[in-house]
Every structure is written in C-alpha cells, then in structure tokens.
Image (cartoon, rainbow, N blue to C red):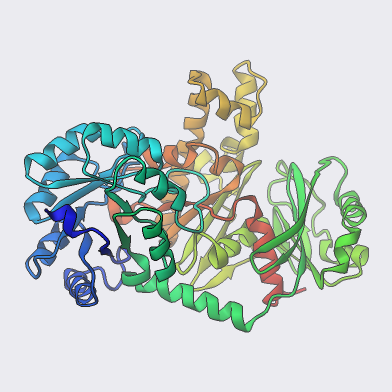
Amino acid sequence: MLIDRLRHSLIVSCQPVPQGPMDTAECVVAFALAALAGGAGGLRVESVEYVKAVRARTAAPIIGIVKEDRSDTAVRITPLVEQAQALADAGADIVAFDATRRPRPASVASLIAAIKDRGRLTMADCSDIEDARQAMAAGVDIVGSTLSGYTGGPEPAGPDFELIAAMRELTPYVMAEGRLRSPEQAAEAMRRGAWCVTIGSAITRTEHATAWFREAIDNAVAVPEPVLAIDIGGTKMSAAIVSGAEVEDEVVIPTDRDAGPDAWVAVLAERLARHTRAARSIAAAVSGLAVDGRWSPMNPGTLNVPPDYPLAARLSEAFSLPAVIANDAQAAAWGEYRFGAGRGADMAFLTISTGIGGGLVLDGRPRLGIAGHFGILRGPTNGAAPLEDEVSGRWIAAEAKRAGHTQDAAGVFAAAGRGEAWADAIITASARKVALLCQDIKLALDPARIVMGGGIGLAPGFIERVRVALPDLGSRLRPELVPAQLGVRAGLIGVADLSNRGLKR
C-alpha cells in the first residue's frame, strides 16, 4: 500500500516562493526530479497545475495541496471540496488540507469524503493535538504537524517535536512537517515517532536557505558587542543587555506618562546602574521620530515629548556610555528581519499596541526617518484623526468605556473570547481598519510579507480577523500576514543590532 511505501521516507515539498524567480512549472518539475534523484520517497506539490506537471514526469507519490488566501476564512490550505477533487484528478496520491478548528468554508468531514470518493488518501495539516484527534475521528489517513505555530501568536523558531510525539500516541501515520531545517532535526522527528518527514524551505526555497546561510556568515564575522537596549513605550519601559538575539537581565518599569523624558532618563539611570558594567553602549527605541539622536512626537496622544528632545545626549550623560536612538517600530522591523519572521525578504512591520508603529526593510536595508509611520496616516479616517486613534489599544479601551464597560484592551479581548458581542464588535472594527491598512501597504510597497506584532497585533485571534477582513482582490494583491517571532523584545533586539551596525550616534 502507498502509505506503507512512505514509512521512514523523506518527502520533499517542491513549493517555490510565490511570485519568486522559480515559481514556474518547469522549475517545480526540476525540483521534484532532483529530489527524487537524491533519495526522496515522495513529493509535496502546491496547485493543480504543478501537480499535473510533476505527475507527467514521475510515478512517485505526490501529496497535493492548493494554497489560497480567502476573504471569508483564515484557512488557506485546500479550503474547498472542489480543490481537493481537482488535485485528485490531477494525479495527487494524497490530498492534504488545513484541519484546524477555525471557521472554514468546507468541513473536514466533507473534504475527507470527497477525497476518498476519488480513491485517494487524506492528510490533515494540524496545529495541535486536538486538531489531530478530531481529524482522526472524522476518518483521516495521515496527520501532520504542518500548521503548529501558524494559527496565531509568535511563530516558534524550531519544529514542534512535542506535537509529533503526541500525535504518535494517536496513530502511527504521522507526517512531521514545519520548520525542519537540518538533517539533525529530521532525524529527531523520526526518533519522536514520525512515519515520514517533509522538508520544504531548506531544500527547495533557495531564497530562504540562502538567507539562513547569509545570516550565519554575518553573525560569524561581526561579533556583536553587548548593548544596553531600552524600549520606551507609552505604558512601560523595557531594558536588557542584548548581544545579537540574546536578551539578558531584562527589566520592566512602568512609564509615568506625565513625568516627561528627563524624569524617565533619571529613573532608567537609577534602576539600570548595574547593567552599565556589562554594556559597551546604549541604544534606545522610542515611539515617534528619532533623527540624529533627537526625539520628537509624531502623535502626542501616544506619548508626548518636547520636539527635538536630545535623548541620545541625555542617556549618554546619565550612563557615561555612547548612546543612539531609533524609532521603536523601525527597530522592531529590523529585529524581525535579522532574527525573526522577516528573515530574507522585503518586509513591512506593524506593531499594534498602545498606538500603531511601523517599519520597513527593503533591499536588505532599514528605512529610517519618517518611513513606515503607518499609525499616523489620516487618509483611512478621512482626515479626522491619526489612524492609530481609531484602531489601537487606547481606542479599544475607549470604545469599551463608551459601551458602558471598564475593561482595558486585554479585558476586551478576554470578553470577546467569552463570546460577549459588544467586545467582539469592537475588535472586529479594529481588525477591519488594520486589514485596509495592510492592503494599502501591499499596493504601495509590495513587501513579500507584513509582520505583525504588539500586544493587540499578537492578541489571540487578531491576525485571523485581519486576514478574514482583507478585501478580495486576488492572490497577487493580497498581503501575506505573519506573526512576529520576537514578540515584545523585537525593539530591544533590533535597536541593539542597529547600534552594532553603526547607527549614527
């Protein structure tokens, strides 16, 4: 039987970067044949067209999928019965589909029935063990760890070996897939009980693999100095010793919004005195405009400071160390590009929390100055106010108060999670405006992906709501949204790396 042939096999996912230079049928076929020549036992191929092209050249087992961004659901791997049937008709031996417990246009049971009616095997791409349980109950043949880490929150750095082991308790037919980037990780997946292992980006996405090696070389030749990194935000100030992506001795201090920057610097100097022994310099990430060491507000409602406040000089005096400053979202964008979800690709970054910050990395370079200040755009509000005043955490809390509730933004999300309609309506309204902003960013700058962070951006279900609210303009015009990997530390890591790379002091 086919499933027995796949035991202990390496499956190679022949999926090029969308719209990349290798996104052609000819290249996908070449990837497939080269993988088989190297010992692959099967292939995972995206789209009906590419499945047909590969099937015409080999009899090897093919797992077929369709990826489609839709306006009505966050499910994007073979969401429709017709797509599953078309993959089977094109020659796929196994049809894989998103089996997560998210709202979906076709049930897992209906997909399984349609695929089996074509005489094909079924594979459930799961995010957790409960997805796998429900898929097994519905009659699926194979479960995969494919979507672990991709349904909300920061994307993990490595494979989900724990999920692979847990799935093995349910069934022997476990496909290990997702963030497996080395032979050692593939071997560990087998040791955890996988029936077979799928490798994708490490083999067939040249852009991604090249970026990993480029990053490793950069890190090897540029040993980072330890930096005292500080992130001054509207609700708290964070600080830590940062070397590369390593964060140590982190301290969090509430921001006294009314005290002003001189008082903030004094508090930081008092609380962080012991950190100066380990640091060679100071780098501060701040909301607003940061140019030549001077800090100015872009939206005083987020955090009010005097125009052209000489923050770098004040920090240098207080700590007796050289100091630089950068916009917090631009710093976080650089952190995600260097060490997180944006590695190796043009990207825009959105941090949605007290306000909205943004950053851009294009052609491998951070765009500083006023670039990326998406939160102060006034077009989406018809000039009435900065966009962040109608989207961010402050707005969510204000809307709750207007509706007669005292919750802050976190409380509103909690209420929405309990099914309270008033809270759900507020969060949905915020997500719709963020979706329009993301569409505008895509149309104006065409980044490969938009990385979303911040307390609101990474709140449970928010990115899913934004994806669902995106206008249906076709896959080429639809932005790819991914959660930030570095979480609340992105600004600290990014500003420290910018300092080590010679950001002007």
